[in-house]
Length: 184
Image 1 (cartoon, helix red, strand yellow):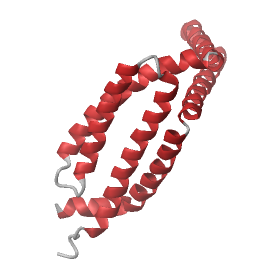
Image 2 (image 1 turned 90 degrees about the vertical axis):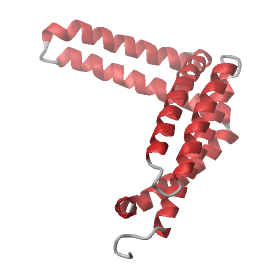
Image 3 (image 1 turned 90 degrees about the horizontal axis):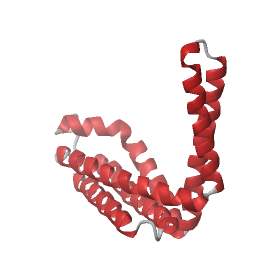
Image 4 (image 1 turned 30 degrees about the vertical axis):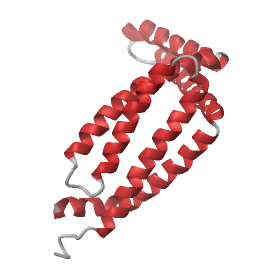
């Protein structure tokens, strides 16, 4: 157990800083859910659009001529998808909300499993609570989809960030209270 506490010491500041950042962004997302939903859809659309432009550009100047047509098609599809998301925020929010629900369910399951494996760590229960909450939020999104897609994405994203931030902060703060191998 002491070795695990020593392993936590270098990352203590990172845990605390990321916990505070997640808390702040999470509370902002819960306060302004429609804005955060729109921002999430737009950022994803821009990312897809840029990746499409890069893929198309690489296909045009790349050395592998046998893959050029497929890479060009891939780039064009990404560009079209990015433009479609930018021009149809409501439809994009509905689709992304379903993807977010799937993400929450999968993340919840993995965090629950990870928390059970780290039971010897201080405050492992915070990770367990985070995993259970992510799983529950994912199920709730499925139940309310698509009627409230434009608000639920921002609210649940915020809730997930707040719980993740609280667990990171708890782990970071509790690591200083644990005895290290040098102190025992």
